[in-house]
Image 1: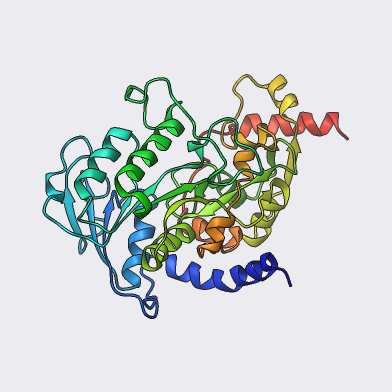
Image 2: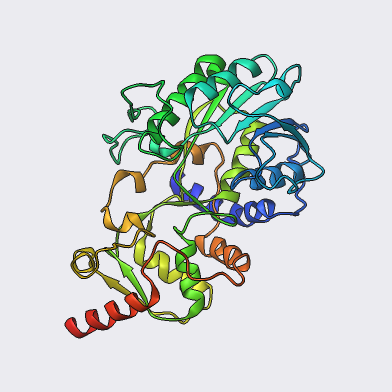
Length: 365
């Protein structure tokens, strides 16, 4: 049996444990032989922070959060919270020591540099949450973390762009570089692809789940065989905490699963796993663009083709212990948290979609 096949079998057997450990309120024993860590989390109450905190605490680790105290300040009343701001308001971090820091909120290189320099000598490892977007447009399917080139921007000091604006990827790359300059081989740079799961604020998967709950025919734009890489926030966060326990260094592509999903089997699998009675009708992007001026934005990858950003190598992360559970399990968890959710924004309104489907069927039957 090949090494890769063996690893795939391990991933399947380990996925259930990873899923349980990522759920809020779960009790999961600390890894044998590992000590309880003091972990500082920059952020903590956004999307991935709660997954990290719940998993780390379930394994016996002690958590301190540092944030502005504005987003869900009562989410973790029994977790120490230090109030401050990445923009030169770091006083509450001074004079304290932790075993490791997870930086979820670094978007500008100046902020990453300030926190890294302040925490150097006071934490053993600095784990920075970057992005696959840190790679430039020249990314190729066979690139790995070390052969791919960074995205660049004309003025690295320019902070005029919004957090998720056009320079997002280049700024993440610069943040990585700032952290690595300070921490060297004690820097761990996590490069996620599309993150989903409970708490996902985007419509990338939630759109389909809300529509499937209604049980109606659903228009799906684009080609059926395009690769789509998702990673569950719980899977990723649990792996990050385990890496702090066991040690890690350098960059890791946090993209999943081991092989990219394909659009049709992905959506059909989610539909079947959730018990939906919806039918999925695949419609060419070109036809949609001729019929509507407001092109839907809820699934942008369906219109982009098999680009490398949806086929990123995650071999290094797999070797470092990243495990996955099926996307269908992620969907079930998200549906449980979507009670009463209405049709999300970003897609076609239901009336327009119904009219498009009727015309599509009339022209293609």
